[in-house]
Length: 116
Image (cartoon, rainbow, N blue to C red; front, side):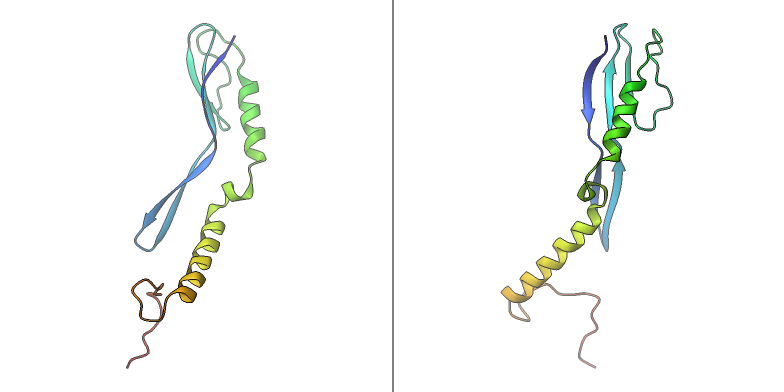
């Protein structure tokens, strides 16, 4: 009998950089302990699907992970689309809430100044 020790859902981790964000993909994985005591971690890209200790077939876990990853919601697989929407909404909110010249107003650093 195989015991599931830990499940990790597929996700992106984002890091803020000076001029944008970097997204790093972390695929789904599952940490298992086989009946023989051998511990193994599997993901959707795992090539080995058998226990190295006793040879038990663990392919069903890999298949299940692949199935779940194929049905992930768009917000999880493409977070940058939703981050851009949120940024645009914040920009609109800031323009409406704060007068021009306010330190709280969104300032586009790429815009050319009107002064010559």
